[in-house]
Amino acid sequence: MAPAARNYVPSLAIQSELLENLQQAGMMRPEVHLEVAWSVITVISGGLALTAPHENLGEIVSALMTMAGSSFDAPVSDTRPGKQIFYAWATSLDTSIRPPGAP
Image (tube, rainbow, N blue to C red):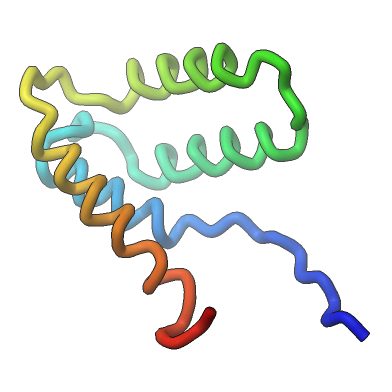
């Protein structure tokens, strides 16, 4: 018998670490409340999943990111620190989501 399916529960833990680091590096506006930003990202990703499929997914994501960016992004010209933070976060996901040695 196959194992029972588990319900997906959105988590803010990974996003919170990423957003904290981005804000500390000056990539996010200092007045942004991180809990609000985490919640917006969770609602966006959950909403897209719940309403899929989308024939115009690219347009939807672009519009949502434009809205979030205008609310949260700091007005910086050099985004390299943010890209470095994102890269470090993204390449750590496998080990932070799965226990070591898990397939």
